[in-house]
Length: 333
Ligand code: HEC
Image (tube, rainbow, N blue to C red; front, side, top):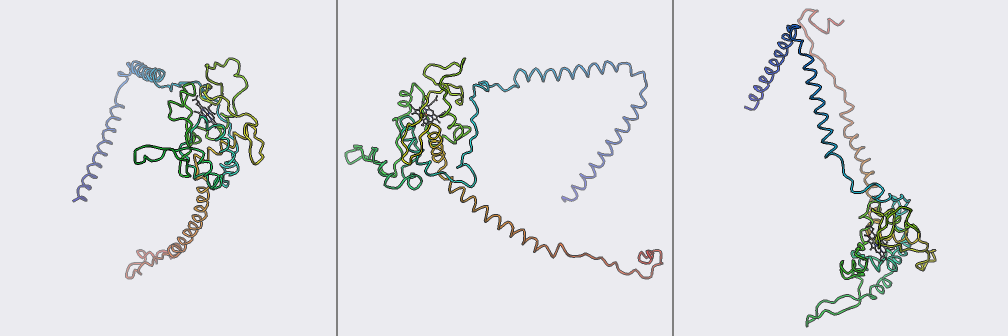
């Protein structure tokens, strides 16, 4: 049934095609038979065509200039200076975090940034083994007070922190944070490296990019600080890192850039704590994957060798009883 239908369709299609050819031929014949009597209004045709082309292009241009262009809210300059790409050691394929740097970075966060910025997604337990021992982490957790579950009278009491608790926020809520910072909200830093274009480079540039004086001509609103890397250049956070601000226990000189580098690496860890494991797993996958791939190529060639190396031979049946001319075997000779 289906075969018949498709056959019919094919035939109809073929007819249509011949029909079309025929039409073209007749048109051609018509064209050749047209005399010069009809060539007079050609200039009118040309004029009409040109006019409509100009109208079409003109209306497209008009529409594009009116509605087509992207409207930038800010100039490129106001978008903020593009952060310098730095050769971060921990971002390389074969490298892990420098765990001593993570420990220093956490110290910078705790002593400098933690008075304004929360790190809500990081529990104390994750610090164990990555940048400190169990006892150190427990001692840090116990320095903070957390709410207990309601007791039999429904009272909520305070208890010292445990490893399973999350690092406490400096403010009770966003409103309190804004009220303490001139209306600006210090964002949570847990995922900050992933949340900003430029990641580590951006935060490092931001922290180290405060000039002594805003450049001549720059307008800085009161309460804001000039930083060329911050979109809009006016940031509510003032410069926070100064040489010698913290005392590193491993004796690393606490310069502004050293502290910025350490805290940025720490913030990268807080945003991607799985990175070391992920890279290790990635290399295992690559190693095993490439062995399996090579093996499968070899097996494919092995299995197909029979098919690929066979020789097809056609032996036509001997044609006997035919005149010599008709017999291809004899004719060839
Ligand atoms: C005195 C309070 C204060 C301290 C201390 C502080 N910040 Fe901030 N931070 C702010 C405020 C307020 C903002 C919001 C700025 C704005 O929106 O204009 C901010 C914004 C940021 C931003 C986001 C910028 C953006 O692109 O939106 C980052 C990243 C940041 N701070 C990192 C840090 C780091 C790292 C430290 C510690 C070395 C630190 N801050 C210390 C108050 C602070």
